[in-house]
Length: 395
Image (tube, rainbow, N blue to C red):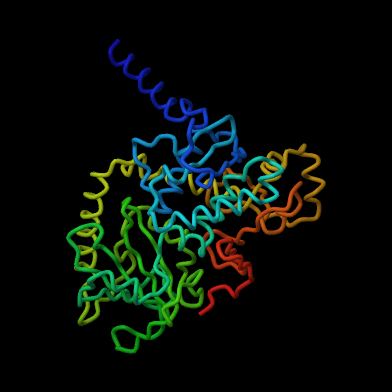
């Protein structure tokens, strides 16, 4: 009986983590800190706890500490949820960027017509939009400034057979005994490391924020932030793709078979990665956070939210626009159908490109990038008012 009682108590407690916060906080910190999001069901099994978990992971990847003593970061009312960013524990230096983005969202036509912005659009405009991601996570705008915060060691990793780079990669890593000292720079370029002809064309700096999550910054040859890695050099894509690939881990040299003189051997490199991962895990174990780092697969709820928005089905669009499926089908007539790929097939075998169908709804939407992960011809910058098309992977 004691086991049965404990099971019931646990189920009730888990339900209350979401359901018991169904009222807006009595005294919100500041109206500027609040934005309301709306949940559009994307697949039959999607539940509010799943969406809640996905949102928490999205905020965590964006630098929020999400302390346990602040459960009202996300406050639900039916199918809408109010986010209080001041309660989320973001870095003080990034709060102005959050407030600016929130102000633009609240002024959007979707927000005025629907009373909220779609959760998927919100994630596409934060995690999936590189310029916003850099500002919201506090990435340094200059490469030399960013790397000067760390003490990089003299020995590097030479990745001759890379699963990411088109050719080879050179990896620098810091001398670290604490999580905030752990950082890496991946040099993407051309030429041969063993032959001494490798030439760095761009840089990917990976470090860890105070909440234990990975932060990714991409820089061009002149040290300026760039929206995505050059696809001619690497398949790394945008920050959201780096996070999806790494999940919450540092990755060993999985494909490398060739050791290069003067660099770590593959075995040494993997051992150095493992040592730094233990440092990070120790830091995470001591955090007071709503993110459970032992539940690695929870991040998939975040990916389901932005992928189902980026490639919506007819049914999702009908719910999103609040029209009958027949009405949605009429609006979508003649639009190209994307057949569902290998990832999350249950999202639907027939999907549409968000870029092609986004203007068919009952309001003028805030435009999002074509892809949250891959180089996009358009990257929004609602923080400065610049919304210009760019060349994917601009060098």
